[in-house]
View (cartoon, rainbow, N blue to C red):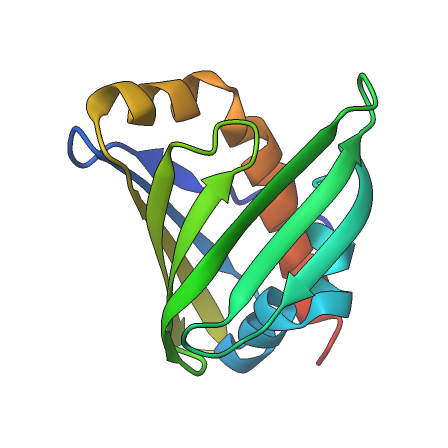
Length: 160
């Protein structure tokens, strides 16, 4: 399966990044691909390295951690956080910390909405300041994000 769809990345406020992507898979399958460790392992790397850890304790107060060794340079890229709110197949609210910049915690809200067997995935990141938001965008995160969401769609659609 190849896709020509892309996520729309916008900056709705000085402290937010909003990502919206339509996926050709039902919401329940996208949710499973987004929250099941062995499935996350198949898409989170965005073809940019080897996953070394996917830890998901999917409950309010539970922790998560994703890590990989980057193909370019061999350094570790890791993120972790805590689940604040979970509504199965609808919404995840969690903190997110890039371990390379541990002082900058984001609050991430992910929603899953289905129409006619397709899922609109919305990821909204709230950060402390415009400078932090701009630093995230400047990392080139969008390229990796686009590839990761392509893979997420493939993993979810394959579960039909």
